[in-house]
Image (cartoon, rainbow, N blue to C red):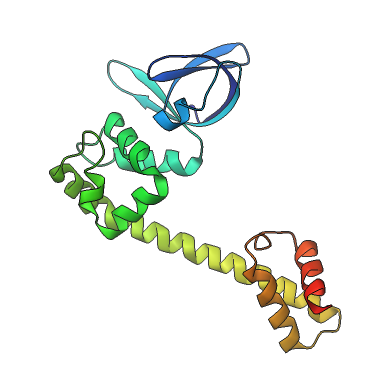
Length: 197
């Protein structure tokens, strides 16, 4: 039902923030790290997870869709509720948590509040293969995207008269620069031409 909100912090409570948007104020639970950075009147954008229980409804907000998706994935494990899922994300962050799941690092998981060895083992058992598969798929998509971008740059250099080998070498130099990896083609082409000069 709720997926995203952009608004202003109206006030902050012990475990939640009230975000005012279009005349409506929503109570949203957030990670402690985010809570420490918020202040009344500050603009905030959150990706929301709407939890519906028999006795209550709760909105949980995250600064990225990745965090929200990982939170939802953690909730699928029996014995993991919102409190434990938030503790895991708050203690480790999405990247470290994902790496711990792939590596089967139960000791790291059990450092989060409310996560004992048994629960850590269950989380690894239920999520390890899925997280590993998702990571491999994301890496494959990223490599495919990078190779398509590199092919576009090579084609642009070839259209300017560069021989195939030199075009490939220039493209490799440009693609190796992290700041240019996701830049538009015209920027990467200019960078390649600067390399040639």
